[in-house]
Length: 316
Image (cartoon, rainbow, N blue to C red; front, side, top):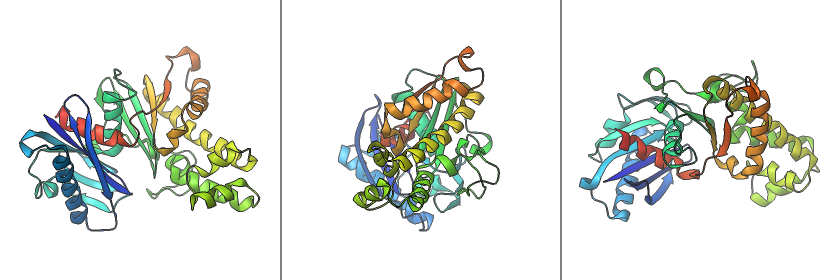
């Protein structure tokens, strides 16, 4: 039996075919273009599904189901996207709309929840029943698995760790509130912090790095820091504090075995994980007296959402 995993993000829609052993056979993607009517976006999701099935040589009769990971508040029981602040979705009956195009069972959940499930089942949290997954991307997504149960909250509206408050009245968040963890620890926030530092430091190597990349990105400050730029190091040091502070809150709430970090920033690898680990060890409640929580890079990378979405279908 095969399963389709669809990972919907603000920039792209990714889909893949996963077999019963957890092997990703084929994957592909298309641009999301989020300002369109939802029916057009869902039609693209369906077309991409059929495309990857064809590429894998898999017929509809061989597919056990389709799983979808989508940002926002997702009612997994009704198949409705209640609200997504990064895509123009509100009260969207995505399951019914999708099945107009592809007649298969469909299971949906929040994208970070799906990615958490993927990492816990197939990735760096494999074998654990207590995992917190944090993805640092356009926003900050969190997925929480405790005692083997994926936490969703009432009508799928919970587990939004990216919107815990770091600073009352702080930076504006895409959710409409000020001071959220997302407004400080997302890749979007890092780019904003980098841009501000560049304006204050016209001689910084961050300007050169941004010019090489053609834009300011989440890598700009990290790359300049590695070349010895002091202003860039301040940006990175502060960013690590912001990321760590939210993770410490998640640790204090759930005390998992692992905190798994995904998103492009996680490609900084062991160096970044060790910095966060030290702060978690030092500042989480009870410190060394409580069970240690291990901070790891999520190993499935950009495929975590596909694996996790497919796992939604496998579990159903």
